[in-house]
Length: 524
Image (cartoon, rainbow, N blue to C red; front, side, top):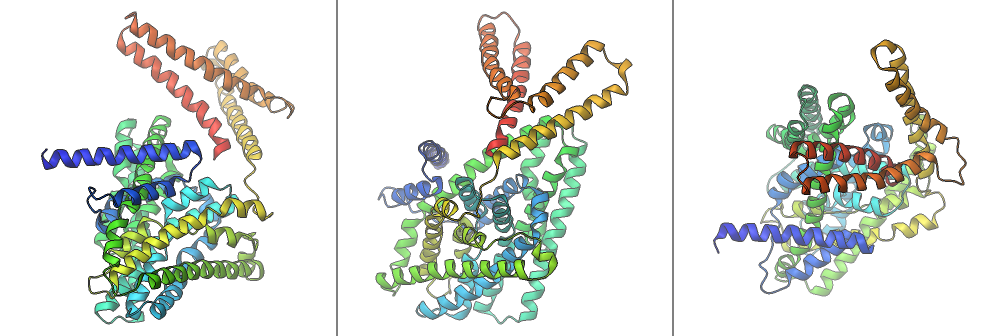
């Protein structure tokens, strides 16, 4: 078999295994990320399987931008802006605090580790991972405020951590000053913000003038790299640029995209996110054998490695918890603007246990120079941190049940708000028709009025019975399946030409997507 065919075969097998494990985990109620890491780790120790080494450039430049963009376009800009104070404090302040605390502890307990290398390791494990955090928050019914803060922190803290890592790596080989570190951080953040906003505005201008969903979606697929590359070239944070452009384009999508383009983009990015985020966890597991083999060559005994790992994990959890309680004290007793955050003492517990690390940590630890003391052991320690924080997050559902203030979202209220808003929007649409009654057939106006009043009337139904609009959606889903089967029978009997068949199937699919979107209000 030629090397090219072998690469294709390995890639196909990798994707099939990833999707299969993720699908089975979801079906049987397992925590998907842990299952993927466990399976990958088991495969890595099979003698016939070659060692997998994580290439940091591939992760940071190839996989991370689309993953962060996919998370950003599904994140509410309004909610993120409303919770910007805790998000900024966590994504900047907590990262700097973690770098210092974990760095000092590592310097004290890891043999022959220099202070610069210890601080570099602190920067490696400081940022939470957007992919892992999303997986955790989907599993546990956390309050909206906590979910928003966790998602915002995981999207923005990579820029701070990588800036700290670059400064620490420079300190390993050269001399750095606080002024140079502050200057580089300012360039990293301000440049990333500027490039991200500029790219968002330019892409928004282009998309407003694109009327084909395929072209719009194609532009969307390259958007993360269009934002990432210019920022990296000027020495700014490409990751921050990707996040900012994604948040901006998501916020502006109702006015710059068609409905078809929005649906197509959403489905495409959900697929990309599903494949990449699960592939990342499998890749983490597959890298274990090589990491362990290199770590065992160091002069640190196994028992000491285990003890150091436990201490580092404990320090990470406790330090994050203490920072969270300090943040809560500021929100409850600090300036008036911060006291409006409605932050309870129980919320830092959930935030602490949801502080999951992921592939960014593993990619970053491979960026450490070859001359870094105990580099092989630090790579193993980073893997232990990733797996340890994933295991730690399994306690979240229990924490939510035990702490009474961690109230899950009120899905019934959210569904009611969705129906009320839809009814209001429909009434506004009817009002616009009343201004030009002569333009439309009276029978069409009567049908539109009936459809609009159907929803508003259903809101008055009793809570003990199924609302009419839900009954309608269920019945319509049933009839859609029968209609699609009839179309396929007609195709098999060759009674209609293919263009007509495809057109009808597209119409049925569009209505089914609309019904599914309404049903997703409960899940979201």
